[in-house]
Length: 576
Image (cartoon, rainbow, N blue to C red):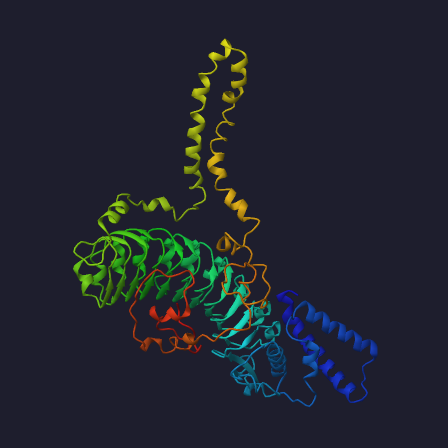
């Protein structure tokens, strides 16, 4: 059923539910009803059809039976909330803290984790306005019936064991302001239903198993906080990245690649913190980075950034933490950078920097190891520096503002063109002997006269050597290329099923839908920084090292915290 029809069908659904419940209660007590048999059958068919087309949660008939006529609700919206919450509870496989043990009866507003407030369109009635089950360690899944909670503004379920996908019915939650699904086992593609939420400002999908592309439309939404780190997203940062009005953007530990877009300049008034670490970004830092005068934390470490730091980086007057370690940066550190008044933490270890101003050594926390700095300890060898610095970097070669596909083919075509030219000259030599000895020359004449055939044979040997590995890998994709084939298979993954695989990458289908059972609650998550009070927390120093593509949750505390966020979600997992 299309989303546009959902709102119109909700009143009809409510009518069907209560007519069905009334009939079941009366028939169960031997009472008579005014409904005729054909009408009852029609209602039953319509209800089942509605559930088949839209809802996929628990047994709807069982839910209707569980709503006895003796229950009295304050208003129809609380009745709908009761139905939605009971359907959701039926999917809970484990609730070790018994948070939902009191989810019984019509007093929905007294349920643990459920918060009510006056409806925005009618202050005389109470509605369910928020759900907060953070750190409940509940195993289950989200059901379509949650789309009945049309007055909800907060949905916080971080640090649980919810799996599967985000229901499409979430598109009904037009008042949803904060959506926190972090630190769970959600899988599949990016939940596009988020793009249909007009009021959402806080989006937190980190520490899940989402994969594939991230829609570029996400950066056109009026979001204030975007946390999608520690997933399996793989895509290129779009040019409209700078359109986002968000103050905090965390994309760390995914598979983003390509250039760092110059549209950063469009975010100068709103952006405070941006975390791009541990992806596949490969370009020079754009000159426009100096326009980010309100940014306090900038982290592009563990990427493939090249070139020298632009002089404009010394104009980032609000900068407190700058992390550029584990890249391929070279050149000198701009003098004005280390003289910024608020800069306290600057790490650029494991690069090829050749010079730094003395002011950098006066910072509270600086890490310049494994570079090419003279008279500094723990630097790279002279040979390493000489080999790397011998080849200059041309930042224009990345063509970050134009599509890169055309550029690779052009250089690759030039080498092939040269070989075909070489065969013709030798082929011209044979023609002269051809008239002398008809038999031999004739047999040799066809090959020279067909330059296309000769060139193909030389390339095929080298070209065939790479193809065999793909061909050999194609039949058994599970053994040689598990990481390469992991992106394609995950989309058609079944939600919340299968046995828990020890290594997620090897079996393509199982890893994307993580199992709901046998999952230990992440103890480290509970100790993460509180969004409401993170400003008061001291900034921990960084100790960079080579991070794996999917770092363990235990290592999260070693990374900087996000500060000055103002949301109601309590103690979500750390931002890294």
